[in-house]
Length: 265
DNA sequence: AACCACGGCAACCGCCAATAT
DNA sequence: CATATTGGCGGTTGCCGTGGT
Image (cartoon, helix red, strand yellow):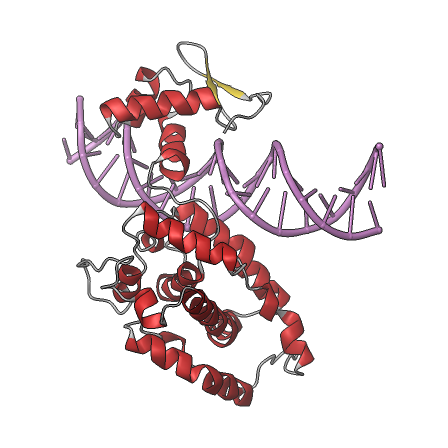
Protein backbone atom coordinates (compact mmCIF):
# COMPACT_ATOMS: atom_id res chain seq x y z
CA UNK A 1 0.00 0.00 0.00
CA UNK A 2 2.59 2.48 -1.07
CA UNK A 3 1.47 6.03 -0.74
CA UNK A 4 3.21 9.37 -0.64
CA UNK A 5 4.49 10.40 2.72
CA UNK A 6 1.97 12.76 4.23
CA UNK A 7 3.01 15.63 6.47
CA UNK A 8 2.81 13.62 9.66
CA UNK A 9 1.50 15.06 12.82
CA UNK A 10 3.49 14.08 15.83
CA UNK A 11 2.85 14.14 19.51
CA UNK A 12 5.51 14.66 22.18
CA UNK A 13 7.08 11.58 23.70
CA UNK A 14 8.79 11.65 27.05
CA UNK A 15 11.96 9.96 26.00
CA UNK A 16 13.24 9.31 22.53
CA UNK A 17 11.74 11.62 19.95
CA UNK A 18 8.11 11.84 19.05
CA UNK A 19 5.18 9.55 18.35
CA UNK A 20 3.92 9.41 14.80
CA UNK A 21 0.27 9.72 13.94
CA UNK A 22 -1.81 9.56 10.83
CA UNK A 23 -1.67 7.10 7.96
CA UNK A 24 0.76 4.22 8.18
CA UNK A 25 3.57 3.96 5.67
CA UNK A 26 4.65 0.84 3.88
CA UNK A 27 7.82 0.81 5.95
CA UNK A 28 5.87 0.90 9.19
CA UNK A 29 3.56 -1.85 8.01
CA UNK A 30 6.53 -3.99 7.08
CA UNK A 31 8.17 -3.45 10.45
CA UNK A 32 4.98 -4.38 12.27
CA UNK A 33 4.29 -7.45 10.17
CA UNK A 34 7.81 -8.76 10.49
CA UNK A 35 7.90 -8.22 14.22
CA UNK A 36 4.58 -9.93 14.85
CA UNK A 37 5.52 -12.78 12.53
CA UNK A 38 8.58 -13.42 14.64
CA UNK A 39 7.29 -12.64 18.12
CA UNK A 40 3.54 -12.76 18.00
CA UNK A 41 0.92 -10.32 19.21
CA UNK A 42 0.38 -8.85 22.63
CA UNK A 43 2.12 -6.36 24.91
CA UNK A 44 1.50 -3.72 22.32
CA UNK A 45 3.38 -0.87 23.94
CA UNK A 46 6.43 -3.03 24.34
CA UNK A 47 5.93 -4.38 20.82
CA UNK A 48 5.84 -0.88 19.37
CA UNK A 49 9.15 0.03 20.99
CA UNK A 50 10.83 -3.27 20.24
CA UNK A 51 9.79 -3.15 16.61
CA UNK A 52 11.25 0.31 16.30
CA UNK A 53 7.91 1.89 15.58
CA UNK A 54 7.30 5.40 16.79
CA UNK A 55 3.68 4.62 17.39
CA UNK A 56 1.58 3.97 20.44
CA UNK A 57 0.81 0.39 21.29
CA UNK A 58 -2.81 1.16 20.65
CA UNK A 59 -2.06 2.39 17.19
CA UNK A 60 -0.06 -0.74 16.38
CA UNK A 61 -2.78 -2.99 17.68
CA UNK A 62 -5.43 -1.19 15.65
CA UNK A 63 -3.35 -1.27 12.49
CA UNK A 64 -2.71 -4.98 12.89
CA UNK A 65 -6.23 -6.02 13.77
CA UNK A 66 -8.01 -3.84 11.24
CA UNK A 67 -5.68 -3.95 8.31
CA UNK A 68 -2.56 -6.09 8.38
CA UNK A 69 -3.74 -9.33 9.93
CA UNK A 70 -3.50 -12.04 7.26
CA UNK A 71 -7.06 -13.32 7.51
CA UNK A 72 -8.64 -9.90 7.03
CA UNK A 73 -11.12 -9.86 4.16
CA UNK A 74 -11.09 -6.89 1.86
CA UNK A 75 -13.78 -5.71 -0.47
CA UNK A 76 -17.51 -5.39 -0.45
CA UNK A 77 -19.64 -7.22 2.02
CA UNK A 78 -21.59 -10.02 0.44
CA UNK A 79 -25.39 -10.01 0.64
CA UNK A 80 -25.11 -12.85 3.11
CA UNK A 81 -22.85 -10.76 5.29
CA UNK A 82 -25.11 -7.74 5.02
CA UNK A 83 -28.06 -9.89 5.95
CA UNK A 84 -26.22 -11.21 8.95
CA UNK A 85 -25.24 -7.74 10.08
CA UNK A 86 -28.82 -6.55 9.94
CA UNK A 87 -29.98 -9.50 11.92
CA UNK A 88 -27.24 -9.39 14.52
CA UNK A 89 -27.60 -5.65 14.95
CA UNK A 90 -31.30 -6.05 15.61
CA UNK A 91 -30.35 -8.44 18.35
CA UNK A 92 -27.33 -6.77 19.92
CA UNK A 93 -27.33 -3.15 18.79
CA UNK A 94 -23.99 -1.43 18.38
CA UNK A 95 -21.98 -4.32 19.74
CA UNK A 96 -19.66 -4.20 16.78
CA UNK A 97 -16.99 -6.49 18.09
CA UNK A 98 -19.57 -9.09 19.03
CA UNK A 99 -21.14 -8.85 15.59
CA UNK A 100 -17.72 -9.05 13.97
CA UNK A 101 -17.05 -12.33 15.75
CA UNK A 102 -19.75 -13.85 13.60
CA UNK A 103 -18.35 -12.49 10.35
CA UNK A 104 -14.99 -14.17 9.88
CA UNK A 105 -12.41 -11.90 8.37
CA UNK A 106 -14.44 -8.78 8.96
CA UNK A 107 -13.43 -6.28 11.61
CA UNK A 108 -15.63 -4.41 14.02
CA UNK A 109 -14.38 -1.20 12.47
CA UNK A 110 -15.44 -2.28 9.01
CA UNK A 111 -18.87 -3.33 10.17
CA UNK A 112 -19.28 -0.12 12.11
CA UNK A 113 -18.32 1.91 9.05
CA UNK A 114 -20.68 -0.12 6.90
CA UNK A 115 -23.51 0.52 9.30
CA UNK A 116 -22.89 4.22 9.58
CA UNK A 117 -22.28 4.93 5.91
CA UNK A 118 -24.65 2.53 4.19
CA UNK A 119 -27.41 1.51 6.52
CA UNK A 120 -27.92 4.80 8.27
CA UNK A 121 -27.82 6.59 4.93
CA UNK A 122 -30.64 4.41 3.73
CA UNK A 123 -32.54 5.13 6.91
CA UNK A 124 -32.20 8.83 6.24
CA UNK A 125 -33.30 8.43 2.65
CA UNK A 126 -36.34 6.53 3.82
CA UNK A 127 -36.94 9.31 6.30
CA UNK A 128 -37.05 6.83 9.10
CA UNK A 129 -37.24 9.05 12.12
CA UNK A 130 -37.84 6.53 14.84
CA UNK A 131 -36.07 3.37 15.80
CA UNK A 132 -39.35 1.54 15.26
CA UNK A 133 -39.48 2.83 11.72
CA UNK A 134 -35.93 1.79 11.19
CA UNK A 135 -36.60 -1.74 12.29
CA UNK A 136 -39.64 -1.77 10.06
CA UNK A 137 -37.56 -0.64 7.11
CA UNK A 138 -35.06 -3.37 7.77
CA UNK A 139 -37.79 -5.97 7.99
CA UNK A 140 -39.79 -4.96 4.99
CA UNK A 141 -37.21 -3.74 2.52
CA UNK A 142 -33.62 -4.50 3.28
CA UNK A 143 -33.99 -8.02 4.52
CA UNK A 144 -36.11 -9.24 1.59
CA UNK A 145 -33.89 -7.48 -0.87
CA UNK A 146 -30.76 -8.92 0.60
CA UNK A 147 -32.34 -12.33 0.62
CA UNK A 148 -33.09 -11.80 -3.03
CA UNK A 149 -29.44 -11.00 -3.60
CA UNK A 150 -28.51 -14.18 -1.84
CA UNK A 151 -30.84 -16.05 -4.14
CA UNK A 152 -29.32 -14.42 -7.18
CA UNK A 153 -25.84 -15.18 -6.02
CA UNK A 154 -26.69 -18.80 -5.49
CA UNK A 155 -28.63 -19.28 -8.70
CA UNK A 156 -25.96 -17.57 -10.73
CA UNK A 157 -23.60 -20.16 -9.43
CA UNK A 158 -25.96 -22.95 -10.34
CA UNK A 159 -26.58 -23.72 -6.72
CA UNK A 160 -29.76 -23.90 -4.78
CA UNK A 161 -29.90 -21.54 -1.84
CA UNK A 162 -29.73 -24.62 0.27
CA UNK A 163 -26.42 -25.76 -1.07
CA UNK A 164 -25.18 -22.20 -1.32
CA UNK A 165 -25.56 -21.67 2.39
CA UNK A 166 -25.57 -25.22 3.56
CA UNK A 167 -23.26 -25.68 6.51
CA UNK A 168 -22.28 -29.05 5.17
CA UNK A 169 -21.37 -27.78 1.73
CA UNK A 170 -17.79 -27.61 0.65
CA UNK A 171 -17.50 -23.88 1.00
CA UNK A 172 -19.13 -23.46 4.33
CA UNK A 173 -18.00 -24.84 7.61
CA UNK A 174 -20.30 -25.74 10.40
CA UNK A 175 -18.71 -25.47 13.79
CA UNK A 176 -19.85 -25.65 17.32
CA UNK A 177 -20.67 -22.37 18.94
CA UNK A 178 -20.32 -21.18 22.47
CA UNK A 179 -23.96 -20.29 22.77
CA UNK A 180 -27.17 -21.53 21.37
CA UNK A 181 -28.89 -18.35 20.33
CA UNK A 182 -30.97 -18.24 17.21
CA UNK A 183 -28.28 -16.31 15.46
CA UNK A 184 -25.40 -18.68 15.76
CA UNK A 185 -26.75 -20.82 12.99
CA UNK A 186 -26.40 -18.07 10.46
CA UNK A 187 -22.95 -17.12 11.48
CA UNK A 188 -21.89 -20.70 11.26
CA UNK A 189 -23.29 -20.95 7.81
CA UNK A 190 -21.52 -17.90 6.56
CA UNK A 191 -18.14 -18.82 7.93
CA UNK A 192 -15.83 -19.39 5.07
CA UNK A 193 -13.16 -21.92 5.56
CA UNK A 194 -10.62 -21.30 2.88
CA UNK A 195 -9.26 -18.54 0.70
CA UNK A 196 -10.60 -20.32 -2.33
CA UNK A 197 -14.08 -20.30 -0.87
CA UNK A 198 -13.80 -16.59 -0.28
CA UNK A 199 -12.42 -15.92 -3.72
CA UNK A 200 -15.26 -17.85 -5.18
CA UNK A 201 -17.81 -15.75 -3.37
CA UNK A 202 -16.06 -12.62 -4.52
CA UNK A 203 -16.11 -13.72 -8.11
CA UNK A 204 -19.79 -14.48 -8.01
CA UNK A 205 -20.47 -11.21 -6.29
CA UNK A 206 -18.59 -9.21 -8.89
CA UNK A 207 -20.21 -11.08 -11.74
CA UNK A 208 -23.66 -10.29 -10.43
CA UNK A 209 -22.64 -6.69 -9.82
CA UNK A 210 -23.80 -6.78 -6.30
CA UNK A 211 -22.19 -5.74 -3.12
CA UNK A 212 -23.01 -2.70 -1.09
CA UNK A 213 -26.41 -2.45 -2.56
CA UNK A 214 -29.43 -1.08 -0.91
CA UNK A 215 -29.85 1.85 -3.23
CA UNK A 216 -32.17 0.07 -5.62
CA UNK A 217 -34.97 -0.24 -3.18
CA UNK A 218 -34.66 3.08 -1.47
CA UNK A 219 -36.96 6.02 -1.55
CA UNK A 220 -37.97 5.90 -5.18
CA UNK A 221 -39.36 2.41 -5.03
CA UNK A 222 -41.51 3.31 -2.11
CA UNK A 223 -42.72 6.68 -3.27
CA UNK A 224 -43.39 5.36 -6.76
CA UNK A 225 -45.73 2.82 -5.31
CA UNK A 226 -47.43 5.50 -3.28
CA UNK A 227 -46.37 3.98 -0.02
CA UNK A 228 -44.34 6.72 1.44
CA UNK A 229 -45.90 9.03 3.95
CA UNK A 230 -44.20 11.64 6.02
CA UNK A 231 -45.31 10.50 9.41
CA UNK A 232 -46.60 7.01 8.93
CA UNK A 233 -44.61 5.94 5.94
CA UNK A 234 -45.65 2.34 5.82
CA UNK A 235 -49.07 0.92 6.42
CA UNK A 236 -49.81 -2.36 8.05
CA UNK A 237 -51.51 -3.50 4.86
CA UNK A 238 -48.39 -2.83 2.90
CA UNK A 239 -46.32 -4.60 5.49
CA UNK A 240 -48.51 -7.66 5.15
CA UNK A 241 -48.45 -7.53 1.38
CA UNK A 242 -44.70 -7.22 1.22
CA UNK A 243 -44.30 -9.90 3.75
CA UNK A 244 -46.45 -12.26 1.75
CA UNK A 245 -44.36 -11.60 -1.31
CA UNK A 246 -41.25 -12.61 0.49
CA UNK A 247 -42.79 -15.38 2.50
CA UNK A 248 -41.62 -18.10 0.19
CA UNK A 249 -38.09 -16.84 0.27
CA UNK A 250 -38.12 -16.57 4.01
CA UNK A 251 -39.52 -20.06 4.35
CA UNK A 252 -36.75 -21.35 2.19
CA UNK A 253 -34.19 -19.65 4.36
CA UNK A 254 -35.78 -21.07 7.44
CA UNK A 255 -35.48 -24.48 5.90
CA UNK A 256 -31.77 -24.05 5.63
CA UNK A 257 -31.54 -22.97 9.21
CA UNK A 258 -31.75 -19.21 9.11
CA UNK A 259 -34.06 -17.88 11.78
CA UNK A 260 -35.82 -14.82 10.47
CA UNK A 261 -38.62 -14.66 13.00
CA UNK A 262 -37.09 -11.61 14.56
CA UNK A 263 -37.75 -9.69 11.40
CA UNK A 264 -41.33 -10.65 10.92
CA UNK A 265 -43.77 -7.84 11.61
C1' DA B 1 -9.85 23.04 -15.79
C1' DA B 2 -11.11 24.43 -11.35
C1' DC B 3 -13.87 24.21 -7.61
C1' DC B 4 -17.04 22.14 -4.43
C1' DA B 5 -19.72 18.68 -1.97
C1' DC B 6 -20.10 14.31 -0.52
C1' DG B 7 -19.13 9.48 0.75
C1' DG B 8 -16.05 5.94 2.33
C1' DC B 9 -12.94 4.49 5.45
C1' DA B 10 -8.57 4.47 8.16
C1' DA B 11 -7.13 6.18 12.27
C1' DC B 12 -7.70 8.50 16.62
C1' DC B 13 -10.00 9.50 21.12
C1' DG B 14 -11.97 8.65 25.49
C1' DC B 15 -13.81 5.56 28.51
C1' DC B 16 -13.85 1.36 31.05
C1' DA B 17 -12.57 -3.29 32.49
C1' DA B 18 -8.95 -6.50 33.22
C1' DT B 19 -4.48 -7.38 34.64
C1' DA B 20 -0.02 -6.41 36.65
C1' DT B 21 2.77 -4.40 40.20
C1' DC C 1 -5.94 -3.41 48.76
C1' DA C 2 -4.46 0.55 45.98
C1' DT C 3 -2.48 2.22 42.04
C1' DA C 4 -0.60 1.88 37.41
C1' DT C 5 -0.64 -0.10 33.04
C1' DT C 6 -2.60 -2.37 29.22
C1' DG C 7 -6.11 -3.92 26.14
C1' DG C 8 -10.60 -3.61 24.12
C1' DC C 9 -14.58 -1.26 22.61
C1' DG C 10 -17.73 2.18 20.61
C1' DG C 11 -17.92 6.85 18.98
C1' DT C 12 -15.90 10.39 16.27
C1' DT C 13 -12.80 12.81 13.22
C1' DG C 14 -10.53 14.06 9.18
C1' DC C 15 -8.22 12.77 4.89
C1' DC C 16 -8.73 11.44 0.23
C1' DG C 17 -10.96 10.03 -3.93
C1' DT C 18 -14.78 10.83 -6.91
C1' DG C 19 -18.55 12.83 -9.19
C1' DG C 20 -21.13 16.93 -10.24
C1' DT C 21 -21.31 21.76 -11.59
